[in-house]
Amino acid sequence: QSVLTQPPSASGTPGQRVTISCSGSSSNVGRNTVYWFQQFPGTAPKLLIYRDDQRPSGVPGRFSGSKSGTSASLAISGLQSEDEGDYYCATWADTLNGWVFGGGTKLTVL
Amino acid sequence: QVQLVQSGAEVKQPGASVRVSCKASGYTFTDYYVHWVRQAPGQGLEWMGWINPNSGGTNHAQKFRGRVTMTGDTSMTTVYMELSSLRFDDTAIYYCARRGYDFWGQGTLVSVSS
Image (tube, rainbow over all chains, first blue to last red; front, top):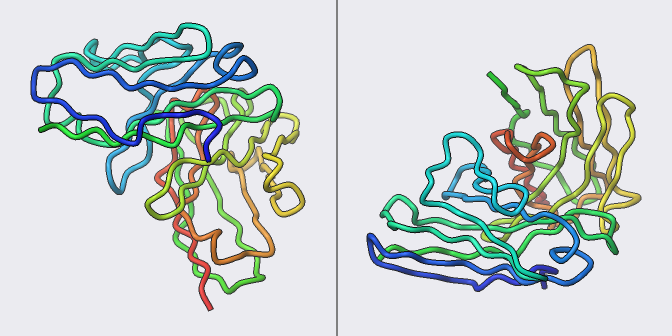
């Protein structure tokens, strides 16, 4: 059972906008910045969003992050087939004195 | 360019220890903590801890305290993660990642099998 709650799956058709949620608490998401990662089978995770809404260089503008209270969201607009993969959120958890990850969301492009 | 290159796959028996290395290049090694994250087959990501290569200071997830040791060698720009008393459920891919999670190693598969 992950400290951060993500839907196990999400889906959309090409061109659509999809969002993936990450729900936490006041001691983690509510107080600390959220990171988002994309992972394809057999490869290491890739940083998509850091500090809630910042994109590393090279990450397309189709990916955006936001946060409100104890929940964060990753939005993918103009969905493409190559976006199909697993997505994870993560943040620092004060009460655990460590980082925690969400359980992951498997995104399917229909 | 920044690179984190990890050691190769390992097969260990239950009760044994394993040491995974992560060699950094392309940046000032002592300026960035290094995280260790693992992923069991078909499962999600799990943070294990971090090491400050400058001071050698570490912080481990409660779950691994007493079993994990993280060390660094500044002359080799390499960090190491040793996990002892291996159990079957320690079978996973182990990743190192630079502070900020902007660069990751390729992963090291550790299989625990009798």
